Image (spheres, rainbow, N blue to C red):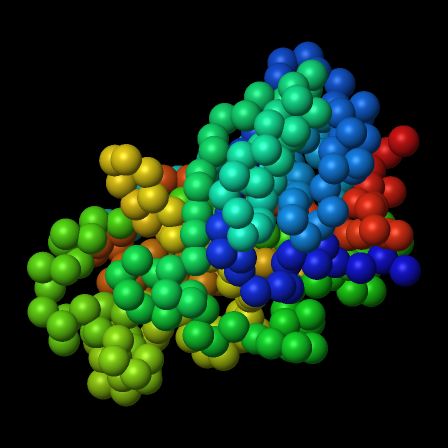
Length: 293
């Protein structure tokens, strides 16, 4: 029986690394994917396949769409589709470096590593702004229902779709706000993480209240802060049994529903955006049976 990649539903790790890969021109990726199956255990290495790769192998995964790009007043959202996404998870950054080397060697024939992002857990699950991330995440069976495909048939059941965006924060601009304005931008008090009833309509919590959508737009967030020598921010990662919920959340954030733009755009911006299909596991290995032979 197919199961989801276990890292999807596990807590975020202490350390992580994201590899984003393009497909080399003229490459035949089938043999390379077989090597990936030998390495990826779904827990220490979670794998997502993008449309460029799926199209190259002639696969049609129902429900996988192009990531939407928006250019609205005060809210720019790019779409940056890629072929392959790997989320390396662990407690030791050195081990992640060695896993990266193993993956690079295994993928080199067909894939080019375009981006490597190092991420980490901050204060037991907070964004670098200091606010708790993913407060309203579903848990238990609700998380499985929100994140994992069911009833779609062999090769698809147990899979998931993931939305991935790298956000770059302007922490100076955020810290320049008064404590009240910071709380109102997020929609929660940093002191106790309680939702603020009279926060403005642009507050992030109000824009993305998952239960307010029809149908409800629950996703399982596994976002992690990142930083390098020049900048820092959040790798937003949201798993769903389809991309419908995330599409609805993003449309509301950029103001397409009512013209109100999420206050997040006042101090942070996404620089990437892509959807990937995360295949299920079968007998401890990635199940790629949904792909053509």
